[in-house]
Image (cartoon, rainbow, N blue to C red; front, top):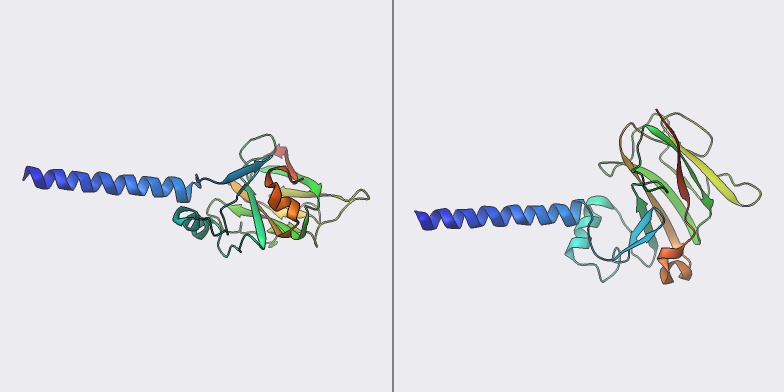
Amino acid sequence: MKLALKILAVLVIGILLGLGATWLFVVRGAMPGGVTDGPWKTNLLIGSSGGDMRVRAAVAVHGLFALNRSETIYYSTNADSDGNRLDGNCTYLLTGRDPPARWWSITAYAADDYLIPNAAKRYSVSKNSVTRNAAGQFTATLSRRRSSRDWIALGGKRFSLTLRLYNPSPSVAADPAHVALPSIKKVSCS
């Protein structure tokens, strides 16, 4: 009887440790290979042959339909340029220049990693959709209320942003921590 209880206790502890490690590495995304560039983060193992089971599981949970690293580099953030967590009750300005890639897009995602539902169906901005000033700089508004033409709709909850660089220039692959990526500045909160 005592032996059976010990075996059961070891099994329960093993299952709990396994589930906890899975949650930490897959759901929370705490895996090796991370690179930070301002508020933006990328993982050099995503989409590469060097990605192990943990990386592949995290991509399956957070990056549905992710492309190979040779085609696309993904940056994501859940914080603004000051390091504060992104909040759907706030308004943000996303400002920058075209990143060095054939094409790019920035998309907002809800905490469940799906698009934020909104009546206007405004989920992202891209190289082809933003307006640039004479100096080549763009500014997009992220908010709950419709704003400018360059607007991404938010919900009243926490969210994240994903920046996709399709066919990035060799300089991005060579030094992903020093790419000129857009800044994210909080304007106000309701």
